[in-house]
Length: 393
Image 1: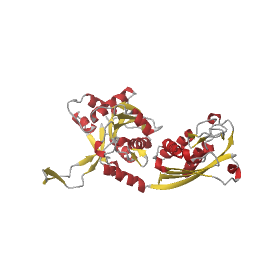
Image 2 (image 1 turned 30 degrees about the vertical axis):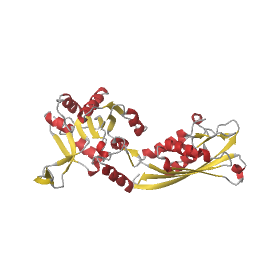
Image 3 (image 1 turned 180 degrees about the vertical axis):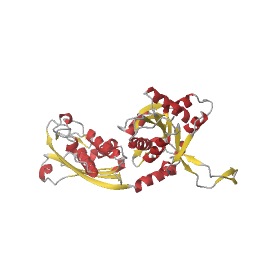
Image 4 (image 1 turned 120 degrees about the horizontal axis):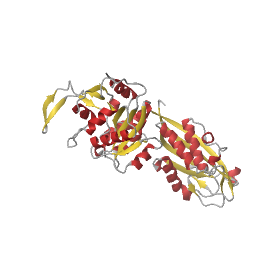
């Protein structure tokens, strides 16, 4: 009698991200490369999380990669395990880690390099497990297939029964774990469904999805960027802030400590430049202003470094699968001179926002000695943020 799939089943995902992906080119493994301003690994994590039925995510990584992976994931939650030299070994290590963490009813084993995972594929796989120990998504082969006879075309291959296998592959957890434990380590398997079949269980083929194609070659990344770009809209926000100059205060501007005889007074460190950028980003997101996110009445923000506010705004963009395309900042003051500190400010702002420095513009102007800025009573800043957000958000 089949075990019934219920809403109470514990579903755990295992992302396989221990490979180097050398065929994709680039200086870093493909799972850490960015598409649309977000790492491939983060796209994959978000696609699994978005389904709603996945209760935990484990990631099999290359040795020593935990720090880099967490930096790419930001505040996303995942459990890391060190993988192996082979995909099969990495999956086995991940399954053992899941077992040690309390196990699961169902496990979804997914390649990190397949970041565009529709929830409907997961739904079909889970439904298939009502009648099997394993299920995989696959697509029929549409092209004519021939054998390679040296440099010549060989015999045609009947494609009628051939399919291209994708991931995630879904399994009853205890069954696939036992199959891996029993596997002859002298043999290699390219996927987990082969291991389950060799152990005597049927694997159901379910309808896959073209969006699940694996990122393997440089041109795959170009197509992925184009796909995301065609589904994005440009959003622009403007921010403005002003603070009073006061003695015995440090002067922070653009995340840089600037030598001056006075500093800016405020509840936090009063960095008008970063505050203006934060408001510009929040404006582009239509998500309130800096005061609504960090109320000055809250004592925890007294003296806080403004880079925390800017990092928060950055994370709000990333959570919406957005991209920060450009920041244009103008600082308004008679003194100090901004020019000597411009490059340091650009570099620091780019570092906080995790974008290339060529997306950050820092300018300065005076008010020709007019108004509070002209009388050197305070400093103002205004900023414009340009974001790319998913059209369907």
